[in-house]
Structures are given as C-alpha cells and as structure tokens.
Length: 324
Image (cartoon, rainbow, N blue to C red; front, side):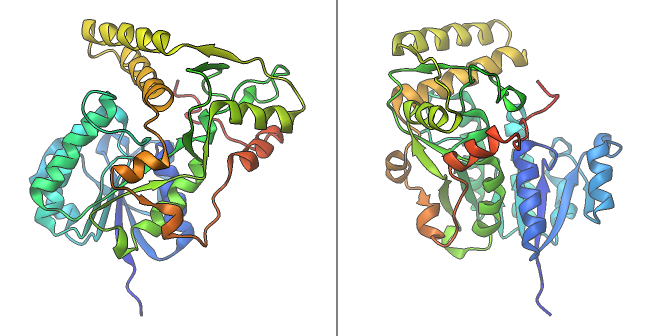
C-alpha cells in the first residue's frame, strides 16, 4: 500500500487556502490535515471540512514553536495560506517545523513577482519569514503566482460582469502596455499539488501563471468577447507614485488600521506591476524562479480569454465575498 504524503494546511478558509485544499482533495494522493485555531472551531466552514472527513488539528502559531511541535511530528509538508497581516506569526511555525522534522515548508508567498527591499510591504514581511527558513536550513518551496484573473478585469458599460467584481476599475496605471503575469485562482491549488510532490522544486522559488498580458491586451479581450467598447483611462506614473506616497503617510499615522494598509498594498502592487514592470516572466527568471510551464508542460492552465468567457456566462465566483 502506497503511503500518502501528509500535508498540514494553514488558512484553508481563505481564497488561496481554499484553492489549495480543493486541489489536494481532488488529487487524492495526500493525507490532508488542517491547522485551525480553537476560536475558529465552530465556524460553518470548519464544520463543513469536518463533514468532508478532513482531520482538524487545533493550534495557533501565536502559541509559540514548542506548542506546535507535537502537531507537526508526523507531517511531511506544511503549507501556509495565512492572512496578509499575520505573515510574521509564521516564524514560530518555521521553528516548530524544523524541530518536528518537516520535509518541505511552503510559506505564505502567493503574490506577484517582486524583489524585496521597500517596493511592497507585503513582500518585505514575507522576506522575514523566508530568512527564518534559511537560517533554520528548513527544506522549502516558495510559490508566487500571477495576479488573479478574478481581480484583473475591467467593468463593462452594460454592468454584465459587476456580479463578480471585487474592485471595479477601468483606469490603467501607466500607459497600459506593460506586460504582467496572470493566473486563475482555481489553478493556484492545482499547481501547488504538483509542486509539492516534485523534488525539482525543493529549496526553489517557483512562479505560476497562465498568461503574460498588458492591461490594453486585457481590455482588448474583454471588448472582443463582450461585443462592448470599454472606455480606457490612463494614470501617469507620477500620479501612481503620488498615491503610493499618500497611502504610505496614512499608514504611518495609524499603522494598525487595516484600510490604510490595504490601500498601500494595492498602490504598491500598481507601482510594482505597471510602473516598474516587476511581474514578468523575464524578471522571475532573473530572480531565479523556476517556470511552472517548463516544469509541467502537460498541464494547460485557464487562460484569461477562457476566464473572460466564463465571466460573461455568469459562472465566476466573486473573491472575498462578504469580507470587504
């Protein structure tokens, strides 16, 4: 009898976590366990996981490494999908994973390609975790992904796509011609399930994506498939940078306010992707990432064009429904 690879997933109720969990279940070759805080045990989503027969392990990175070691003792792979504001709480999870003998640690990366060092605060907080992994010499895989299709499409004049739109927006930062990597949220988990079984990806960065398109190309596809004409507005790089600086000042005034940190994160995403041009395959390879399409040429991801057709057919779920 083949022993299934044991995987402990943190953050299964989040958007990335759900994608990963769905893919692990569908794959069928994993012994899945979910790390859940005691305070969350009565949540409907956790109850649903229990009905599916998934094993729940009670624990919280905030409890410290020693409390987590027994929970991780029989775990091969740890995957973290923790929320954006809790990145550094993974430090205790890293320390516990090392002591427990975990064979692969997948920290909560899952953002666009961007070098560390003051460009995106969310990337820099992840870097703190990565450095803890390296100091511990813990086996790892860091997985980043293209910006989701689900938050990359413009509004249509008819409103046909409003039902799935999290961030209505038809203004393009820059001139609209900078290419950026994209991926469908549903594919993130599928790629993760492949990556964590692959020895080639151990102690490596991997970038997952379906397309590399400019904003103008995205608008062209939406125009073509919808039969409508979307108005295009452009925001000069100087204005993007000014918004970023204003958002940074707001965070400095009240560092604990989530709304300000979210606005800063989105401004920094715009600056990194569309002004600096960080989120490209060329940049990923320069930074040492493995290309997921070269690793798994047999898998065909959901292209943005295919996503757009589903979107217009009313088949796309709105991300973070009810959370923002």
